[in-house]
Length: 156
Ligand code: HEC
Image (cartoon, rainbow, N blue to C red; front, side, top):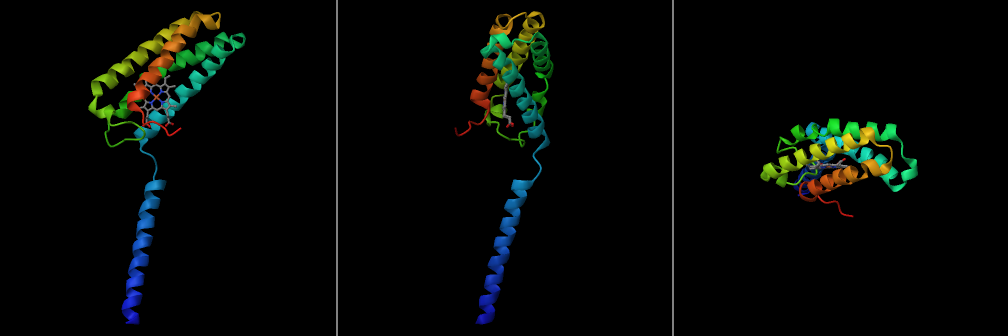
């Protein structure tokens, strides 16, 4: 009787250990390289937009060299994230619409490349915040219009 009881406990203990190990693996496994690559790029977009946005909020801090650099970076990098959205298994915080609504997603990524090119054009000759603000606002709208449909909403 005692023997049976012990076996049963051992099994359930093993079961729990195995389950914990499996959960631990999921939580600690290295992120999918596509997800990581595109999230890193997006993060750097957030940084670039933050730098320029601070200037838009405080126009007397306008720094032509910084605006040129940030805008050129965005325009240059704007073509890079999209190849990292090809693998449907690499979900990350993308909504499934990325893979069910591919034409619209592609259009939005192309509009974004266009908007960042226009911002870069404006930035290269800007002598004040006013000179790049409209193009900056347009890029911000482009980010948002894509996130509305294709980035999983955060609980905030
Ligand atoms: C065409 C679509 C699209 C455009 C344009 C776009 N994003 Fe994203 N962005 C996404 C998607 C999809 C995700 C979720 C990616 C994931 O988690 O796998 C994302 C995620 C992010 C994240 C979170 C990254 C992380 O660490 O998880 C930030 C920050 C971000 N975007 C900033 C921007 C900014 C700033 C712009 C504009 C300058 C921009 N994005 C333009 C689609 C877009």
